[in-house]
Image 1: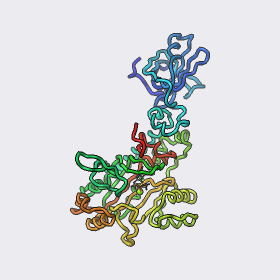
Image 2: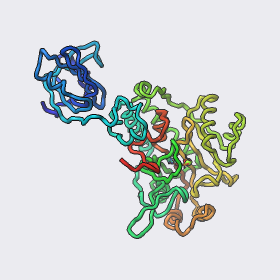
Image 3: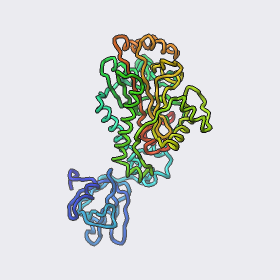
Image 4: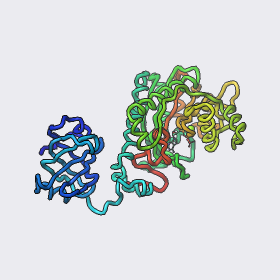
Length: 439
Ligand code: ATP
Ligand code: MG
């Protein structure tokens, strides 16, 4: 038996009865009924029943009954019709090759992932991911990120790769990881912000990046990781932040639609979530959002920002009253936004900024950026940062910088909300938080 002839279980199930097939995967279950052995074989695509009858092939039967759950095995045989089997067919085995034994007991049983705490699941992530439901999270991630990439590429964006070892914090002082870099203190990048903007000065007009971002988030929440995947864009020649918002909402809607088309059925089956493609994305200014919250009996804690509880409440109200899972809040207060954000010309207490809220959680933040170097330097000072440390950055603005803006989307938050996962950690292959740095 040659593994090069191996096909996936889904392909085997499509074969005409009577066809020969080589399949391989993990032993999901072994059942012995009378003198017949049934192996449920699992691969990435699904399950296939393999049958061996003792009276037809006593030698093979003896081999098969020795198998254990999670052993890796290949079978060669003939596909036959079988009404009672998964997919209406099964493989009558003629040959078997044991490729690897699984040690017993299993640290966690992929069938019982629900009974295992998340922390232990993450300790044994490779076994946890053998559960089809858990593997699906990462196939959805793959589809979502490719859909975003495809959308932006189609709009003339070019993907860039910016440094993750940086000299200055980009998103504010505290939540930054220092790194020992030879004899210097440097940081892990919190975002590609300053370099995306450099690319606007370089005349690239539209760039995007999918890459890791690092935040020293000390608090344990279900929506923060210390390392996450950020999908960032930056675009030039905009009138205001609305131009960025239109771009981002179309990309996000395209991604939701692609995930729904490809995995909607399986998402319903495994997560009990009905995905719908949003048609339009309502917009509220921060002030309007606060008014709406107050009308529903919630008093926001900060007049210039939206607190987490308010964000969640607003999500519920927008869903219930306007059927909107996805909406924008715009014009956040200057206090709560980073130094590179453009202030609202008519009222500088506010900014030309926005957050995209998906199912009650901030998914994207973005803004028009301040592109006038003198104003930018002043804003850096206002935030209590040292202008000297940003000289390398302000330089980008002195030799012809077009008006521009951009946004960043948290990929794990996107997937967590698409699948309504309770904890963002489930949406990261190997999440890092203040306690966890392995495996
Ligand atoms: P929050 O207020 O929810 O902590 P933020 O406003 O600090 O987020 P931004 O700097 O606006 O985050 O980052 C852009 C996007 O990146 C966010 O909208 C979110 O989707 C994602 N993101 C930010 N921080 C984290 C994190 N610690 N873990 C996972 N995703 C994050
Ligand atoms: Mg934000």
